[in-house]
Length: 449
Ligand SMILES: [Mn+2]
Image (cartoon, rainbow, N blue to C red; front, top):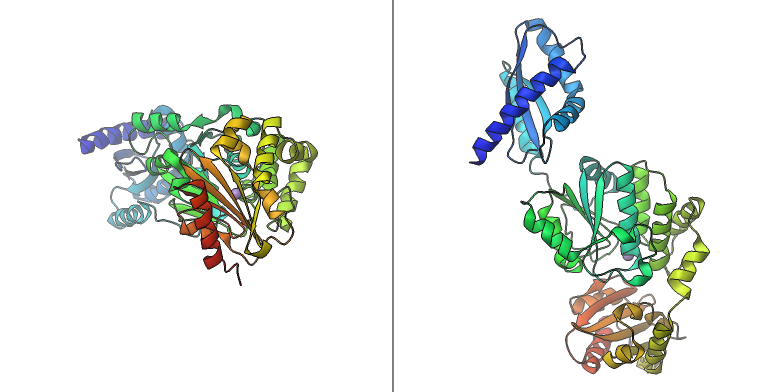
């Protein structure tokens, strides 16, 4: 059945190309008595081998060159003329040249399916992006400022290149990020599920991009988009990244995924506009504690400087992201501060937010963001634990100072993150989860030594 379909498409491609070449391709090298004899379209529509023959021998070479030079133009025209979900790349060969035909066959073998790229660079990322027309962007669950800022910046960058890009949030976006330009257009996990159900694999997305996400778990049910799209890319800065896409661009030394988006914009030759600037500054500001944590590097300050130059208001953002909080959140902080404990001779602090705290203050999980900073702010603290009671278990967050590596501790419980900031979920009571987190810290991070 599939063969019959590609045969039919092949014949349509052949007919349309013949018409386009005769009517629209103005190239003196295309002359004489020629015919487009056959179009062989691969089943995934990625490639079409176009065979043609020319009666006059001396005109064969020039015509082949003319068609190869015009391949991009012909493909575009073909795309307009035919309603295909993907316009194949055109590979021309002379009907009567067996050697060239064999070469084309080996090229097709080499390029399909594309090989995974485990250590990709911004150039690799730019290449797969340039090829895509419709893109799905997926930030991680419990979306933070880096994830949403980077995702919305990426959406804007891609739209600037004339592509269609949508952000699919695996969990709802917290209210305090809704001021970001583009936040009103984000889609949810249900939208992603529906698209996956109503389209065959490979459509409608040419590319799915996971942002700031170190594992498939972190994408919730939106992880399916990565499998479903024609191609996949991850852009991330977590050292614990599993290599979840075909093209994996992970720079663990980057302060934020926002820094990578800045490099990507440069690689794609896209200038920062006020929208990209505000989103990127949010990403950087969130992941660096407004440019004050240890991961704040020269690049993050360059990005910040460029964002301010492009129109982002850094004071306003600092207020929105770090200084202003609701009365109910302020009360939740009071509960957490009240629970403060000191362990390992003052080297580890612990705070908790119980289900009752959330209920009585009228807050939700999103409001616990940033509370952990109060724990690491206590003088003499090398590591801090913040445990909050959630529907799905106890969410444990860790922060530390060098050389204490809390990524390893979170991984022990199936979580992940960075050396100095990580998290996991433990299914138990609040007290038991805190006990287990503390003993893991003691053993793995050698806190007692
Ligand atoms: Mn990040």
